[in-house]
Amino acid sequence: MPRETFQQELDRLVGEVVVLGREVEGTLDDMARSMDGYDAEIASRDLGVDSRFKGRGAELDEECMILQARQAPVARDLRLIYTIQAVNNHMVRAGTLGEHICRAIVETSECERDPDLHAALLEMARSARDLFGQGLDIFENRDIESARDLEAGDDKVDLLYSEAMNLVANPSDGGGGAPEWRVRAALMVHYLERIADHGVDIGERTVFLVTGERMESAMRQYRDRDLNVDED
Amino acid sequence: MTMKRTEETMREEGRSGDREHRPNTRTTEVAGRSSGGVKSAEPVVTVENLSMYYGSFKALQDVNMRIDRNSVTALIGPSGCGKSTFIRSINRMHEIVPKARVEGKVILDGEDVYAPDVDPVRVRRKVGMVFQKPNPFPTMSIYDNVLAGIKLGGKRKKGELDEVVERTLRQAALWDEVKDKLKQGGTSLSGGQQQRLCIARTLAIEPEVILMDEPASALDPVSTQKIEDAMEDLKERYTVVIVTHNMQQAARISDYTGFFFIENMGDPGRLWEFDETSKMFSNPNRKETEDYVTGRFG
Image 1 (cartoon, rainbow over the protein chains, first blue to last red):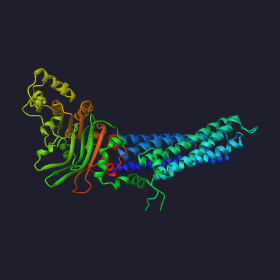
Image 2 (image 1 turned 180 degrees about the vertical axis):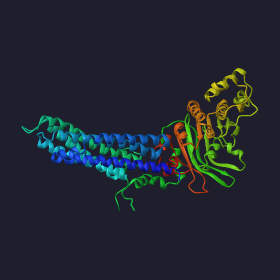
Image 3 (image 1 turned 135 degrees about the vertical axis):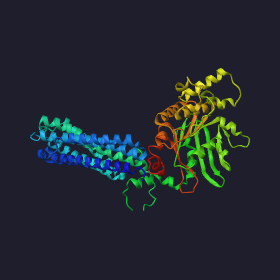
Image 4 (image 1 turned 120 degrees about the horizontal axis):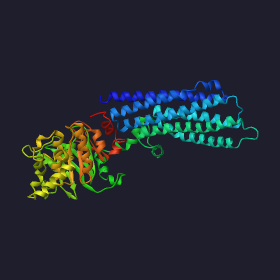
């Protein structure tokens, strides 16, 4: 079978990227759970994971480059390697941001917090974690129908971002929490919004991988399809 | 009914329109591609419903294609699918094969080359050809090889001929290597140099279209690169159609790519898909094209 070895290499590469993605998802889960009770113990488990993510990401990136050099991929193979590199980058950056949030929780666990802002942060953390997980599921299963749901999830995070930033700028009387925590909270709001975006981007890249079309165009075609055609 | 779609089902959906069409219908759509999102340019060759036969054997069926002026078009596909047969139809070279015949039209500059009053020799002066194996005339010098075609057209002044030799050898990226040995035999050159000499010989008759049938398949990578570089320059003045089995070469040098394919053993070859090269090598419309360019078969 022509190119059987190349196909095996691609399959292995996808598997390794998903493994890294699940590790990042684990860090984001710790991040959300530690945000819940501001639990420094859970958060401290993930301190330093960013260097491991970056190192593994660099290895996968190099594998992609070598495959391109050796196999000169085109069409779906080219889209797959292009997507793997992009997804890999999104995962590493999301993992790094998750680690930064865990570190912020550890370093401000004793500080006084604004309960309203903390509640917004917790909701954002759960939503960002879930969006990342959805994006990764879409990539692993090539389940691009679910990519439609990412848009709504992203809108929710954007609303929470506005709400949280408003609370950062306008603390309730006497309840704004310690200044050190507020500064970190502002950064965490930004990081969480970025993590959610990385999840959405992973899903969108998968749409491109499968259809060869960019998200907006592919989704428009999907919505405009003839629903009267029976599916077996 | 399940709502969950995975990669395969979505791709099938995306291609369901193609699957409803027979390939000949598809290629008819291709012929009108100027209105189908592909850039509009002046066609130099338009092929309409072309079928080709060797005796009773139908080698090619219902090919429609428009070849734009000053473009490079690559023709790819498995062996025996009709690529070489097709390009030989453009300059009527297939007629040298006994019992070969065509149906349909090949329109060159607005004139059907198969019209009864058209002289095939005149067609071949407008549509030059470079073959897979370099074929310089063994008894002629490099200089005379370049001028072999042009001398058939009548006498010219020596200075004029010198200018033609230098210009065409430069266009074929060979001048610097042979300028001091123009009187040596053409076969004294390396294989790659001989092929570039043959390109210069083709250019000397000032064709509008240059057909190349796997011109670099027998050459080393350096010689191949020189021919590819020359091709990039050639399209400034000429229109190039090249048959190649080298996918990367097609991707590197061509503006448009046509994929020829035989669906079932014994069927005639068809133009299965034709599009801009960037599209054909990143997201082709048809599964068979994608399987071929990614090396899944062929």
